[in-house]
Image (cartoon, one colour):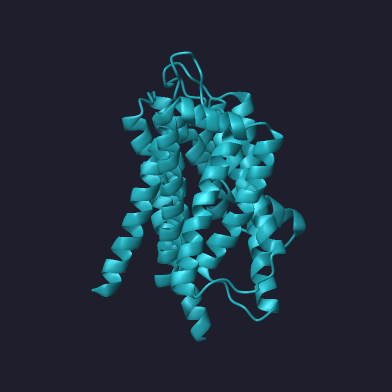
Length: 320
């Protein structure tokens, strides 16, 4: 019974946090003031999100894990800088005309740079199903982005799609930095701690975002925009809280269950986020668009099913 309640808490928290997060983010990025002003301060948004994650991650680290340890910082710094760059690129893609459904589906293609890097380095091989799933996700996303149905006349711009590609490249780099992080911790006799990871990664994400926000001249204008348009400021505060809470629920779920359980929740959440956005935010899709959504969703869920199918085989191998 306790495990069921823990799962409901973790999964429910992830769904509630990120479904609301996506809805709020769309509202902020589509906001247009009476004078035509829009929120265009992507780095400033990353500062707010990362800072909130630092506060919540730090609090949970102290309460649940006994506080920080003298862990190596280099891998955390690199991972944080690359992760915040990926989030910046995704946000900038949507600011440049890419719809939320397209951006969410495209982010599910993060296996592409990982697979490409592994193949180029000759360190991995993949099954035909893995190639098929990636092709379905990428192909479906492309079909949606090129579909005739648009939201209020908008369309995915070349600049926006370029930002999405950059975000996927950053995701591929993050995978490598996380492996290095585990190796660095192992070298000094430590194992990863979930909320410690949230705290330190978010800390370096925040520092990197502050530097870029200042360099790009977004910090002061971002603050002023929130003061001038308090409804946007309130929405950004909610976005930041949802981001931090969602990450905390992810780490909570990982710490209480098999990582595959968390993968299942976060993967299906993406599909529901896309559908919620289409039905609630006024995205109008024609037959081609729905075909793309279906194709990408089948690829995402097929990838998940393959992971479930592989788990028993791994367990059998361990017992031999």
